[in-house]
Length: 343
Image (cartoon, rainbow, N blue to C red):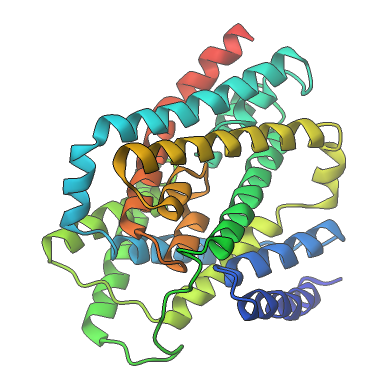
């Protein structure tokens, strides 16, 4: 099919899936539905991809959405428990690296591919490093995005089934009035931060730099984040497409032998992260759903959407998720290279 016709097929399927998920009350149905539709199209010969410019906009808009939930109270809570939170993040990184090392030693995947593919975050950085290190970048991409699909789907189901946090947050209408000046200021800060992250060539910088700047301005009261619901919904849909369309028939055929071991390693990492959530519940008194989402091993943007769709402490979830991404961005390549040298 021509690209235009493929989009004509993808769009109604996405709307149908999203409508079903939203009707049954599943959080982030506007993310999961298009993601499933994108995977369906991709695995049936689809060749379309979300334009790079649109994905750039999606990243900085979602970053500003999350920045709006950051409050001074979060800094107080985080400063009082930072050793525990740091230990949780390092434990997730350690277990993901161990899974990659075991798969490499068992020669399940060629070369050091499993080490780069098992890293709990910073997918773009790992793809670049894997290619430079002679690993199979296609398999690394498959492992990274398959984990995102598993984690996002599991987090959505947990949020839906959890009695204390399953209720979807009440929101204004789709086209409720928006304060014009704060809205323009939010877009301006996000756009400038996104370009800065791109210029600095930071891994995940298009998301992390606007998030950092927006959080600082929001905490100090210098900015009131304002984004209409329809724009956030549109970004959720496009993020789902970006993930789902990556699952092409060629990649799945290439990764067929690695599918079962990869799924097992993902389930092990998710189970370990759930145990860490129990630790946060017992040691820090965090409510269970907030703790589960905070320790989920990626991706940052999809977890953000799920968190904002459920009655959880969004600022805490994003604080822990951001710390994980920052640490894996700084240490991940060196750690993976260190393990690869010894595998």
